[in-house]
Image 1: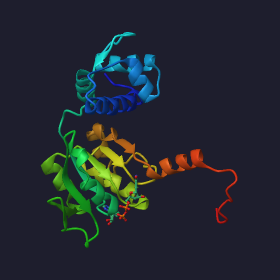
Image 2 (image 1 turned 30 degrees about the vertical axis):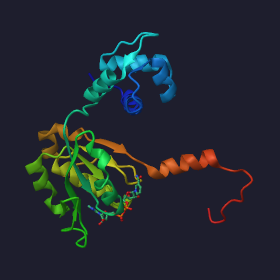
Image 3 (image 1 turned 60 degrees about the vertical axis):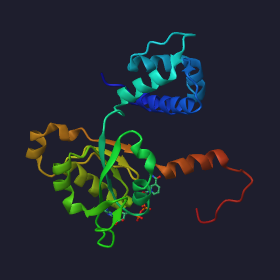
Length: 227
Ligand code: NAD
């Protein structure tokens, strides 16, 4: 069963809320509580939770630990995911050093860059390899997803290299819209139709800043002259 992407996003939000409840040693919750914290309706929560096999009814609560476990299972967060980070500059280093990603079995297996000053150094015990080694690395290690942290003007070409190497799930941090990565060889595409199933999730830090500026704007503040 395919879950609609808006529901997947809300399930991730419910999971974060359940984690917080668990941290605060709250054992039970309701669709009303979840709805309030997620800023959706209780009806929406109950509808979303039917996708995790929970047919909640009005007034009947959920056990936090059970619901959390079920959402984790449906999202696939109980599986081990092998991740590579491509672009080991400031952000790539920060992410590689960020421990929370390991909480749900996201395992950094490889770090890649093209800069000779960076290639050959190591972060957290993992060596940074050159991008030219990516296809062989993927073939040997079976990589599931990539975090793309290259400059925006390099992101499309790097994404295409990922797809060519056999990585079809990309978390893109570059503030650019990636076109569906295409392969050069048409025959190769027809032989492996699954290559069209490329999923790109964008993490846009700048978009968040722009939205925040809108909500923080002050009509009486003088405008910057060069915009
Ligand atoms: P950076 O310049 O410090 O690092 C980029 C790295 O990518 C460099 O080490 C470079 O050698 C490498 N690189 C360039 N082309 C490559 C290629 N084809 N293959 C592999 N590696 C390649 O940049 P940064 O500050 O770390 O930012 C990285 C990206 O993340 C940028 O696109 C930036 O706009 C974006 N960014 C996003 C967020 C966010 O929250 N989403 C926050 C900050 C930066």
